[in-house]
Image (cartoon, rainbow, N blue to C red; front, side):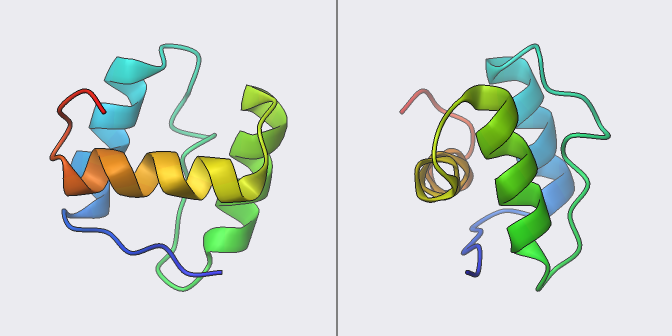
Length: 68
């Protein structure tokens, strides 16, 4: 599974932390092309599926952090 980001990961990561205060830098460790570990980790923490988490991250990226 690949993430399709419209903004740089560092920018997206900060927006995700603003939206979900429970997320830490450790939760949001991501290497391009290595989306699976990130999605699995966040899915477990957020009690969602990896597909739901992927959609959420991509919508935040696409909207440049605007509420989606």
